[in-house]
Length: 206
Image 1: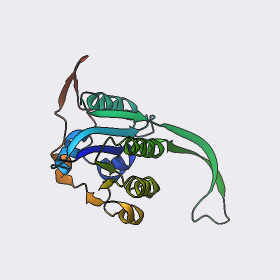
Image 2: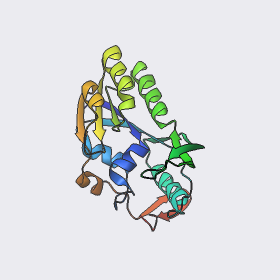
Image 3: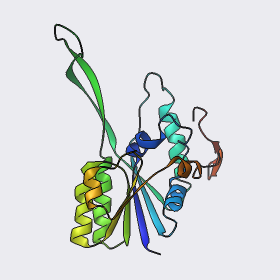
Image 4: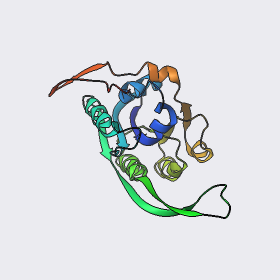
């Protein structure tokens, strides 16, 4: 069985196949085992950022904290945090004559793709895996995938949470596989989880 490390782009996973579904209470290690049954998965690196409350979803920060708590009960999962950057930009209103420009607050998640790429290339250089697997469909990660394959001669696979494959990732990856609903359903945490602090439960909104 190949020694495998999985690197998860948390927001790409969420927006690709978890948002507006009942599968957000996802045990990512179980998902990896389900999708890679012939691999020895020695580590899962989950890259994300802490969210802020938004209109219509005020419980998002507390729900995420509960989810991260559940992930920390899984022995081979490591959480790497990026951050959000909010700034005001001028944008043009669509379909308005005469043209009108307004100031809007734009929030961007920063760091997850860089963190993921850094860990992937570092671990490849230290020969920590036989196969590196990325859970993403972000074409910005095509270059680190190419480097690990061409410069280090190591296999890199893609587990894609989106419906269509990135052309650039497909060009450089050793293999690609879509994450399907059946795999998500089979990889949920139990509604009640226990850690050193006690018992906690799946967020009500999930």
